[in-house]
Image (cartoon, rainbow, N blue to C red; front, top):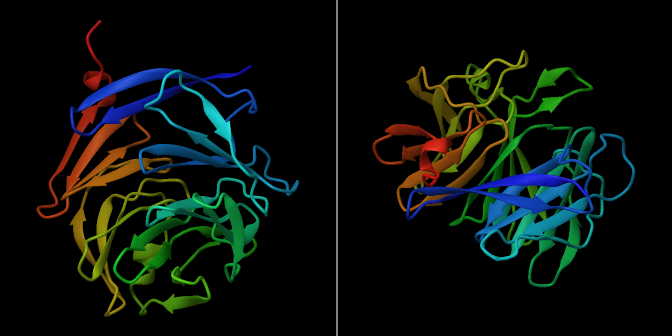
Length: 273
């Protein structure tokens, strides 16, 4: 059976760890998106882009020994590299994927899936951000293959009852700031969402930090020349810091108050042999 490497970073001790994971139900991780939620790793998706029915949902409790993967109830729809986010402490929202507009959420407590309203169009490689106060999920970026364009709108999903979805039209002149694939997002806890990283249509890294004001519905540039490659990132928040495991195998720390960015190679966090 295939063996995968699992890398974890302890925020408290600032130490990294490399483990081996035996996932007997998968031949590869292609098509699956990862989400760390409540200190548990979830993998969701299908290894093939063609619609072949439902997709996997796998749970990996990386702090337990022996390390193992548990296959949970499959999704209702097919998802190839979907976008994912954790909501409160008991739900995982799975959105779209390649050639897919379907959305659904998984209840960790009830162990059930429930389908919600589809996206208005394909938003492959979009990113999600959750506002805990209003219980809204904001969707940024993504690519519509049918139109051959990056998305220029923001989608707001009300998650309290999952009965409302709004498309937010960005003011003219600001669209260029949100046209990106797999940007990294976090809510600043007041009235703005911070957007950075991601790639443009040609696959080049976007090196700026943008602030989107939820109330005014406009964008402004906070910083230029910021190099973070995070198309397939893992992110965690603790108090005023954001921790990112980026594509270049670095642990990146961003202070939400000062905007200071620190980066250290993951290998340097591993215990010495």
